[in-house]
Image (cartoon, rainbow, N blue to C red; front, side):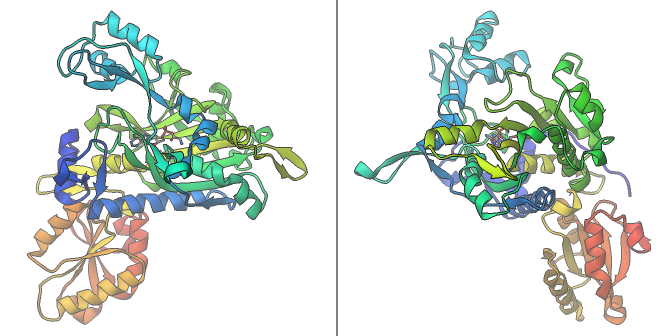
Length: 511
Ligand code: GAP
């Protein structure tokens, strides 16, 4: 049955569905929730973990010399003096003279002029406010001069004379830089060398908004690749992707809004990007298109202008997904060439040398950073998965990130079928699948229930299963089924989750 219907979803609808079905909701609601804080509920936690594990498997698998670490979330002030965050990690803030409401200046202007002004200086933003006579969106009052607010959360660690000024990490990256030298020495002393962190970041956003898109406590999956700057124009595997086409939205296309399909080889020449950088652009796009299997047209790299680039970046493209609920392409990740900005800063402020010796050469490595916002990706998965069909609503998650791999259902709740179904649940769990067991209500209702929460496959145990040791496997998206031997189930389910077509796994028995 191919009557699927993609529906444009509003942000508020998405939030409502997420809450009703158990994906996420605002934190500490009974005490009056604070904006920008969300808890993951039972399904959201599963979805988020699946995404994170796929991220780990893919990005750590790119090089034998990439490793994951876990670091602290609170670090002393000097870390941020060194990284530049104390001075440069600021957002433009504007206050209303009348009601004292404060908001991000660029956001207020964006709302009025329907254009993105991120990265403009407070002076330029003020000029726009005056030119277009922009007022407070809450009360219509006049606005004060645009100022700047540092986005880090400060705190004091310890008490009395022992107390030290510290901050919550605004990006996991600094954890990796703090560990770089120690890890390099504990490991193989080879470059390129990667440190990945999947963890929390904290920012005192002036205007948290769009549910999981702009939060104050959020999750990042970041990989810092330390490499020899002299080798930036090469990558040993570049030839394998030279013809691979990237979807790119260069700065120069801002006016005509055109996304270009550019082969990696051409991206090096036309966009004047180093091969090392372009290689990782290809890997990032493959993660979205081949691993997560998101529609190609939903993805693009957006080149950031000089004004928009983060203060530490030399090359900076954001990875964006087209999200109808948010009115178009939105940033979910970034690929940042940070040069030796951070290691130089830490060396200068701490007095600890960041110079290493590799194959007889002394150097401070440069850093290429793959930085992804986990929550923004979770939001995008939820939006892109939602479909309303004639007889059902369904969350068509990419199979590998579906909160549950399979639902296990005895056709009826009697005659030894539940016992057999429990055996199959055990078999699947022992083989590493996460399984949802349900024996209540009609089988049709149970299928609808799991479709609504996006369970990838339905395994049904019927009377024939008792005689023939086989079951049906139902594909959530096509609702078609195949019959397979129980002994083959783990292998078949694995192939199914990895994207194999149902017809290739068995004879389709039902439309
Ligand atoms: N280490 C580099 C860095 O943090 P960033 O562009 O500031 O760069 C990286 O953040 C990613 O983290 C973004 O692409 C976005 O997905 C996510 N992110 C940033 N701020 C966020 C926020 N307030 N709420 C949710 N996700 C956020």
